[in-house]
Length: 113
Image 1 (cartoon, rainbow, N blue to C red):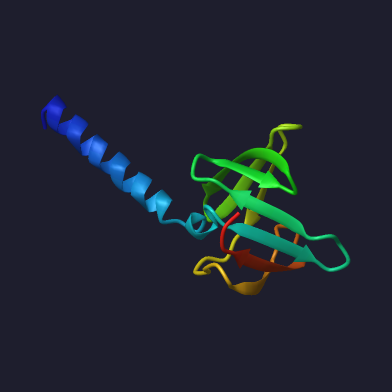
Image 2 (spheres, rainbow, N blue to C red; image 1 turned 120 degrees about the vertical axis):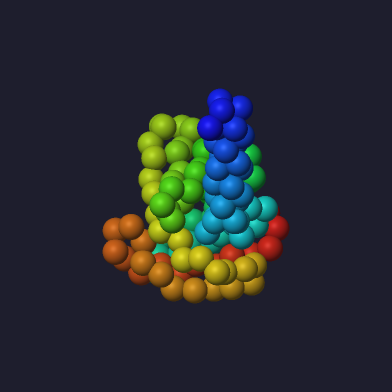
């Protein structure tokens, strides 16, 4: 394999990996609002942008998808927190799932931000 062919193969693999990421579990979050409700706590309202930024109750940060988890790093303290997200949901859906600490949460995905 020539170096040009190897380079082209590498580029194709990178593009395929990027398109797979774009179609990941986070895709329905982009441009919409996710409300997370734990029992006996105030709701957490999250918005996610395609540029990798998010807000959490108004505070800003950066997010990425890693191994089916949504990992958020707050701008204020640089702390990263990852949570699972059940896939296959669309704006208008409400569902139950477990958070990273094992507690049950209610998730609601609403259209728009």
